[in-house]
Picture 1 (cartoon, rainbow, N blue to C red):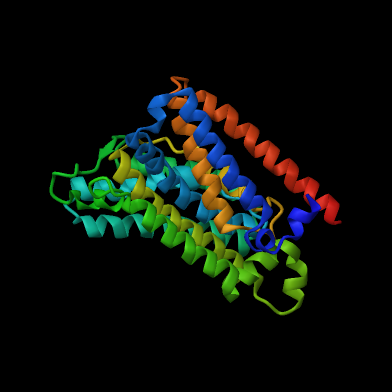
Picture 2: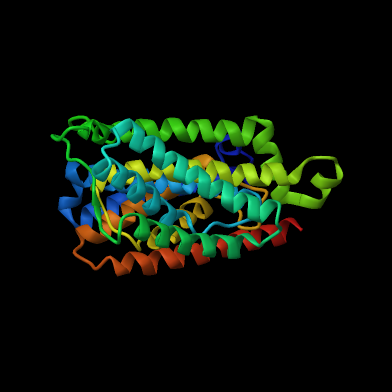
Length: 323
């Protein structure tokens, strides 16, 4: 194992990401053996549909966790974005482009709200995100009068938005998701924004004493998260069209599990966008595999919870060894 870690290729890619990729392949083979229908192309597209919106949620929360914070509101906020923008589309005649912009603005507003309270008002991110989760649910229910919202089908006027995930059998959504992931990786690893965000998670006080405006960069992380949640909402409705008020909580843990499994430390200061991408694909594959085996979706909740615990345990163990 020591020789493997010292291999230049392994060092460049990262042992954790290589192991995750192997887990992804093994899972796919195992599900294919257990259920021959899992090999169908429709199953792959279904898993990808799930991975898109969950992936954008995971990319967003990666920035927040990198600062040492947390955001448990991302799932309900995604539904809030989809419900408010969809209601404007179907009830007020807002054009599709306008509805998409509204979704992004709503997500960004929640990011600004959360970031301001955490960074400038010193309210713990856990408390802020729990409050925002309830605000998002209530706001969406009030705005839509507790009604579900159905976005247009592909054949209807404005249905072109569904091409964001698939054109024919070509997974356009995968290309968009990977492109956004590359941009996020560049921001996190190659820009001042990313360096300060990671430094906040490593040693906030040292960064503050060096003259850096830590509040500004902490708020920026939440704003990036909120914007990506707005994008996630569009990809959710592009895959499933109908949204109901009061839901979204179940996606919080899955999104967090994806980024933590991918190597993002819950203590902050360490994050991997490529690891997050692989982690999300594993969660999506797990969800589709469980359905292919005819098992209840609750089994996925159990497995996801176990994954989060194991990932955090190994993160804590690794930090102890370094210390």
